[in-house]
Amino acid sequence: MAMTKQIRKNDCIILSALDELVPKDHLIRKLDNCIGFRFIEDIVNIYIVYQENQVYHQ
Image (cartoon, rainbow, N blue to C red; front, side, top):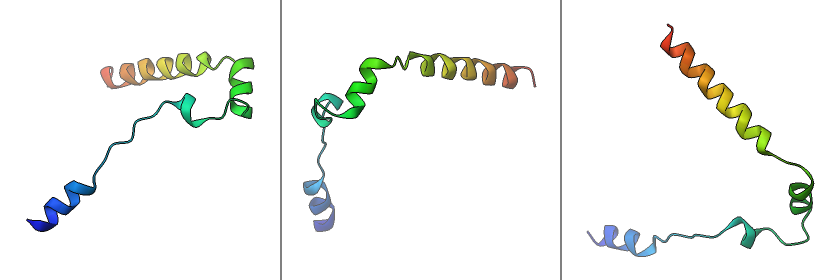
């Protein structure tokens, strides 16, 4: 029981936004401003629909 209390006492949750973690002048921010990464979400959605259709038609 003492061990359980000690573990719970040391648990914590860290929440932060990506804006807080990446410096304002970092290369990633510059790339994000120049390149639209929306196409990745579109490709993933197409793949998910394809996979669902494969499962349905088996």
